[in-house]
Image 1 (cartoon, helix red, strand yellow):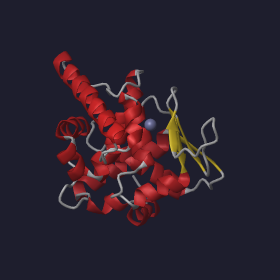
Image 2 (tube, rainbow, N blue to C red; image 1 turned 60 degrees about the vertical axis):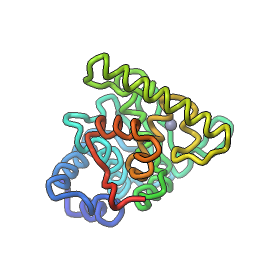
Image 3 (cartoon, rainbow, N blue to C red; image 1 turned 90 degrees about the vertical axis):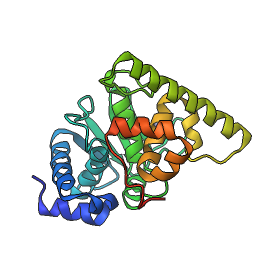
Image 4 (cartoon, rainbow, N blue to C red; image 1 turned 90 degrees about the horizontal axis):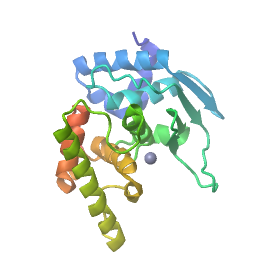
Length: 228
Ligand SMILES: [Zn+2]
């Protein structure tokens, strides 16, 4: 059970929560409570309070709201930090490591929870990487209980989209997906997940096949009417 205090944080800080149906809310709250219970959330430069825990869990559980029994089983640690940089000293909003810990920059995470229409959400991005890698391979093809034909279809669509996107970025054509998606199939999946939840209408129009893959995978149809 989620405490009233934690529910109040969802209401105040997590924009999509208010739009869930009562049945979805009940399920979501159970998932958020379980996530907080089972995962180790650590902070650096940020006070570890309920707000941190609830906002982290809300991002993870938004993705898996309708995925029965998906509990990020390989994920153990979530690090929430005041600043995060790559080896060159450039700012990183987040990262997901091979052994399935996730690091999230607190400011970016809070922004993502509040502003859900800009197509950027570091929480969705990094937790998508965790789902992708839950079969041990980060390849943009999450483990799917699918027959080989469906798996091939997924690989084909992701491959085609990556090629198209690389072409568009090279020509300077504006794209719905951030250019970071051109790095690899894994990045495409994570960036597309951000767009799926935040810019569903635009993603559907620009990348209908990719949109359908994600809708099938997440078993959700982000509410198109209210978006973009
Ligand atoms: Zn990434």
